[in-house]
Amino acid sequence: MKTLEAHKDPHKEVMRSAEGAASALATSITPEQCIKVPGPIIQTTDYPINMAAIKMQTNVIVRKSKEPLNLLLPESMLGLIQGYDHSESSVQEAGVFCLVAVHAVIGDELKPHLSQLTSNKIFVIFASKVITQVSHGAGPSTK
Image 1 (tube, helix red, strand yellow):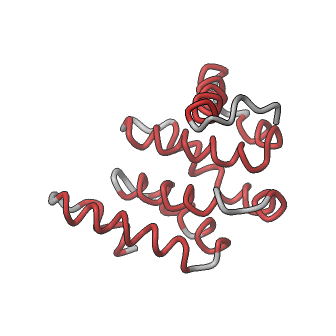
Image 2: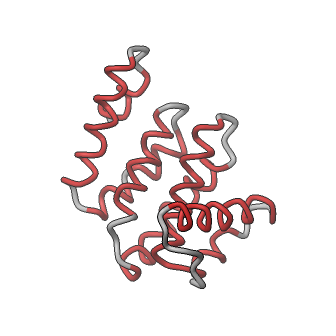
Image 3: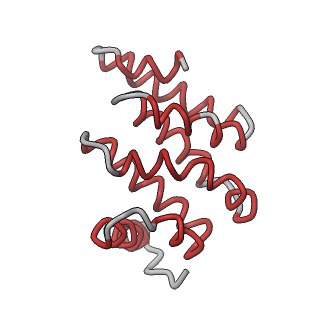
């Protein structure tokens, strides 16, 4: 939690160090812990702590395989949806990127978890996924 709280520091150097520490932490604890623990933090804290927790989850999700992520998804979706609906645009952006990462791993099995979102917000997730794929030279996926 201290690592995430350091994101509130007004000094950019401290914030950058906190981002690096959170990224290192995400790779050093079990993926299950790194997906389960930030969920309540995302739901109960304000910017920038919630944004840092979403980014931490994203770092883990991109390295997970489909089945373990499917099992952990119900615990993290509420926080990700709240992040996407947040008033702070950088939290919204982090939420979208995390949802895009989830979709990249589990494909259309994500769709039922998005039922709380408007069709426009769902479109943004899938458009962001296509843009990410194209910018990385992968082309659109049919997942």
